[in-house]
Length: 238
Image 1: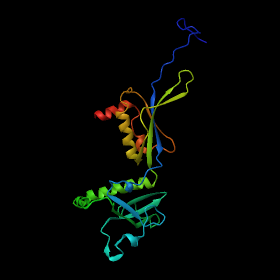
Image 2 (image 1 turned 90 degrees about the horizontal axis):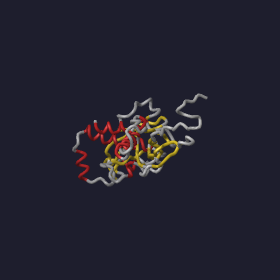
Image 3 (image 1 turned 135 degrees about the horizontal axis):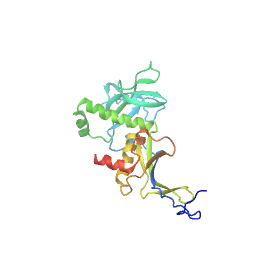
Image 4 (image 1 turned 90 degrees about the vertical axis):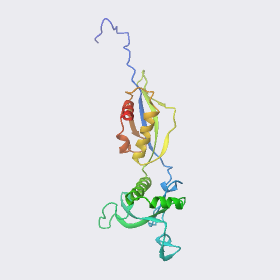
């Protein structure tokens, strides 16, 4: 063994103390209700598929009080349904290509007004340009599709360090509750960013941030987030 005059063999070399890192653990939120269960939503999706959730018979939905001469005035849009492993709901004619009818049902359901919507909200929605109305419908359908596919998330923040004696990982929970109730990777990434940017600003800028999944993969949108706390601060200054 090589030693030096300044460092005798029986004198331990001090270990550099590593800066702790922040671990963002993404977990599947199994308790998320459907988007249309929220009181402040405009729409409610009804499927004509008997094996689907929120399913009703077309005869009970398309006509007013069973009168086939009077269309149901609560219908906002007709819907197509695509399924190949996962599924996707879309406005009729605006979704994925119809592969010979194998994966797509052209008229699979309808979007109707939520029971909480007032007449004034009907007027407010109807006065918007068609492109804006379609964008609002598409946003709801994207959220519903994410929910029905199980794309629902929560996350927990931990401070990770290592024991200086044995090197084992030490995890300290941060003084904040876990966050759940997020539908889709975009919403999960937004909430993670908000917490890292504003709740942990007292930690050093070069603190590493890692993203792990506890019961499945980390959503793509979360994986694209910065890997040090300082980068979040830079984003907020931009």
